[in-house]
Image (cartoon, rainbow, N blue to C red; front, side, top):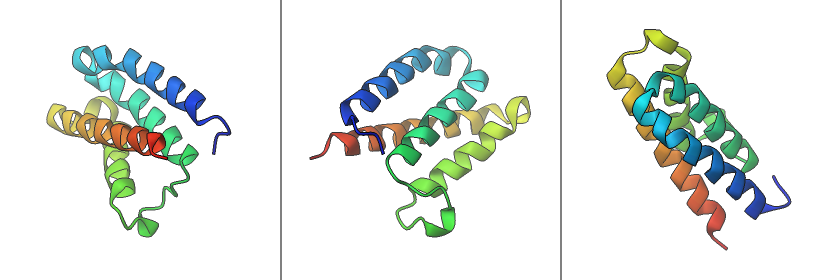
Length: 101
């Protein structure tokens, strides 16, 4: 976990802001980049990425989205949109969680 929580949040928000336009304009290429960002956030926040250990569902949601990301151009557009939506929700959850005292 980062010693400077404000610093990682700033880095995350900067990366996310750069991705927002790509998510609309080029979702297939934005998906793996957002997947990598969310994965780093989860790891830095101390989440184990093993779905078997996930009781809250966030890791399951991440793993599902990552599987779609790994399909690349073979993924269905609707699946890509759903994966992006899930990842944005996870991003916001982890970002909000970081703000909490």
